Each structure stands twice: as structure tokens, then as C-alpha cells.
Amino acid sequence: MKGYQSIHDFLLDESFVRYVLKQNSADVERWEEYIMHNPQKKQLLEQAKITLMDMQQALSSIDAEENYQKLKPMLLDGALKELPKRRNWRYYAAASIAVLFISIASLWILMNDGANNDVVYATQPSQRKTITLADGTLVKLNADSKLEVMEGFGKTNRAIKLAGEAYMEVAKNPDLPFTIGTSTIAVRVLGTTLNIRAYANEDHAEASLLEGSAEVILKNKDIAPIRLKPMDKVVASVSELSSSSIGVEVPDSTAYKLASMTHYDSKQRLVETSWTEQKLVFVNEPLSSIAKTLERWYNIKIEFDTAGIKDRKYTAAFDESEELQSVLESLKASMPFHYKKTGPRTISIN
Image (cartoon, rainbow, N blue to C red; front, side, top):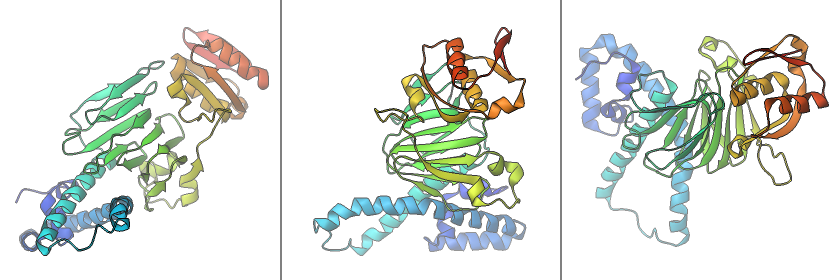
């Protein structure tokens, strides 16, 4: 057997997955023999078993509903008049293990900082891109964002990593779940439309679901995956889900909140995806947060000379074509502040 130096090595061995789930007597014997001859690896192996079972639990709830939805029409039509013959069960067990192995491998890649050797898409401030991935998934990448597509995408996994913001129309593929990892959350779907915002310089990460179903898994937080319905969004605290918070007791209520997506006009358009329609929309948003969006949108730097101004909240909507000065003038008209240019691409607000 090959050398196993980390939990990652065990989880990416399909034989180990079958052993833990007791799906194959030969694999059980193989791994019991391995433990006997490698007692120094027993503790690491046990940790890998615990991690695997936690991941299986995280993946199981969405799979159960999806499988039921596939079975339901057959039940209603009376098509299931007899169970499959016994010889078929071995095939189904093998198939389910393969799907579970792929899902766990993808989730492990996203929840840990492994090496990636695949395609990277990136945008600069004031730039946006539309990308079609190998599986047919449509991705709109917002300004100052980076999307990493994992090696083997579309063949052995559909795993990507995101830093920044992206709107995605995920192609359906029940055999390869689509998983998106950020620094604080991971999202797993089979085919859906969603928007994910996870900028490094913002206090919160958001996952908003427009269509389909999805699960959000919080990094460094031992709670069940959060199941989203259409028009739901999860807002997660970056500071309380960072690696520095491991071992610190943090109430679930402060780590994240489950909310509804927000309409901003009579046409029922959504704040969360307004950027995909070339619009800047803010609803009761602090000026400090608005400033970060303006920095990415106009490729500038905004500094505050007076701390208290940062917390003032504004509601406004602008088209992409509007100049920065027009945006600042509109904001200050509802709640005054002063601003001035202090450098080639720097604005000071006080």
C-alpha cells in the first residue's frame, strides 16, 4: 500500500472510503491488516475516519431529497412493481460509493488549501468577465475577483474556488456535484442558479440562491450544512469563521444568519445580482461597505478622515455609465459628507 502522510491521503483513496462504510469485506480486511502492520498510523487513520463520516453526513441530506424526487414519479405511476433483482444491488452499491467518493474528494479539495494546477480566471478592478466552463456552467465574474478551476474539472470533479463575487448558472450533472469553495464557506449544488460574494476585504461572505437547491458548509464551524431554498441567502461572518477562530466558542447566531434576497424596485429585481445588469444598488448599506464596492467598480482608493461617517447607511441605485462624481454627489445629497481628490486615483471622505 502507498504511504499515507495526511488525512487528505486517506480520503482520496476509494478503497479507504469503502472500508469506512463497510461496503466491501476485502477492503475491510485490507485496512485492518494495514493498521496491524502500521500502528503509528492508527491515530491519523482514525481522524480520517471521523472526517469522512462528517463529510458523508454533510453530503447526505441533499442527496436524499434529490434521490426521492427522481423516485417519486415512478412511485406515482406505479412503475416500481418489484424491487431490482439481488444481483443488481452490488452494482448500485458500487455506483453509490463512486458518487460518494467523488463528492468527498471535491469537498475536501475545497475545504482545504491544497495545490491546484488548473485554469485561473481573474478580473481587475472595474473589469467583469463572462465565462463558460467545460461542463456548460455559465459564470459571470465581478470586478477584482478570481476563479480557480480544479484539475480534472468535468471529468473527476466539478470543484472551483472563488475569491470575490460570481453569478453562476450551474449545468446539471447528478453524477458530479458542483462545489464552490471560498475562504469561509463551501457551497454544493447539482444544477442551480446562485450568486456568491466572498471578497477578502469584506466582513461577510454571502451565498444567495435564485433557483434549485444548495447547501452551505461553514468552515471551522461544527454545525450541520445550511440548506437553501430559492430566494434564501446565507450571510456568514468572516472573522468568526477564520482559521484563527478554531477552538473558540462562537454562538451559531453570530457566525451566520439566514435571510431572504432583497428586491429593490417595482420590477422585482434583486440587489444581490444587480451587478450582473450593470447596476450599483445599495439598500440600507453602511458608507464603509459602499466605498469598497466603489473602489472595485471605479478602480480607485477611498479613505475616511472621519471614522463616524463610515457607519452612515444609504439606499441608492446607479447605472454603470454614471461617473464616480455623480454617484458621490447623489449619496451626499441624502446624508451630507465632504469628499476630495487626494491623489491620481484616491478619494478622501470626511
